[in-house]
Length: 392
Image (tube, rainbow, N blue to C red; front, top):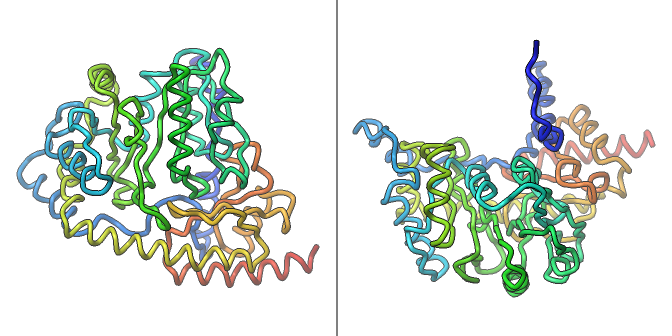
């Protein structure tokens, strides 16, 4: 007899990005050449100083459990990074090292989201964010946000949609799937409104290191009550290492530590020792070179998509995504991405994952792949659309 599953699973949808990745893998096994621009994973890996630090940690036997909040050296290195890059004094005691940004979001939601509590976020948003809320029996209220708002929430939208059940907002800047940031002044207004209403503000900043057109900022500049998520996966190119961090108000530290002890014990000790080396000057120099390469790719692929017939209503200013309107090419983004995969051998992702408002009109492209792959993908899609229009 099978066990009865928890009813909360009804509110957790499949991740279509991964479903397309499975289809692509099957085609590759059959001998097809596939260009992957679906999953948001840097094609770069951890640089030599980070690998060497991990190797030393293993050779020295530093592989035991650590404190649930992380090793002091890493918390201090993250604090110093905020000082050097953003000019902010963030006490190491407020920094909780986590098993990736996912664990950080899980801890934040576990501490703040109660049954039937409503959390505001833009539609489109990274799908796992709403599922973290659902996991604690809260409700993600997806507010349709279009190009006019840079696919982000505005202060006016937060004020309009806040009600008696609302407990907070969950934002991402720069955002997955759109690569767009919330202007600093607008985010300041949102934080003030949420504070006025006694709610919480969680800001996912995992792509903040990959900001291209203006100086990056952190929401931590807006007050100690803002909760910030970050990760070693994107700017630091350590996706599989599962290492991130959470910055919380001093009053929350003990409660988050208690949760982390019970849910995770600690983040990987080897990853933590390696993470300290991410902040060495030689590592930062490598990351900045890679950031420049991501910008070069963005500056190639955005006009190329427009030439293919996609509309890119907002040029992304960060991360490594383009959110493109495909309605001039097809009335079904999901079907179009499947056709592009099978006929052109190019993996893109439909808006289906990111919320209903843009599900049928938009596709997400990740340019976290080489320029050679981007050029070949554009060539393949050009041929695909020539045939596609002919068949239509």
